Length: 259
Image (cartoon, rainbow, N blue to C red; front, side, top):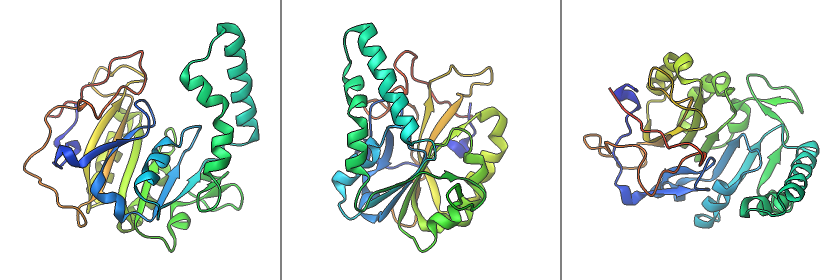
């Protein structure tokens, strides 16, 4: 059960859209912010850039800069080998398995020209070819949508996000190990003053713990100086029908409750 600090500020439901898949990797944003984004900075890519592809359908001026040191030649070879094994074992391929097999080609086509993928870790230090900070990534940039899903390493870069929050028009961040890091998340929310939560979703890859917390939550923040919000009204129930979907199909979606 979350404190009211996590409760999204109201934005009319017809302004909310989901970009990306109806599973893990899809996120809810306010469509009014799309024209106010010049750069999508993606920290954590894996094999899914559908959110970014969907976004660019609405805005051809935006470019994507993705950072993930794990997505390399070895990554793609392992994925291909795994999909081939599944094919021979199951004698059939699901839609998503077919997409995976052609994923590398899509990757090559998407990350060319103005869209770039950097095989480098996002962290606390600037180490050439190995690690880069949010400070360095956002230097000389503004009108940014920052998307962070780096499997627990997000806590290493919160301080740098706070330093640069005025450059960020929209922030999507997935927090892991919620109960353990609740104090730090609360502090972060309080310090990014103009960025207000407009959406929350629980990742259902694990069941909720005994305190009522999911293992991970996805939060969407918007720059409240750019978009008009109504703080006295809000959705009472999360997930929101036809916007939110379970991150994994095998488990029920998680109901978010507030104190």
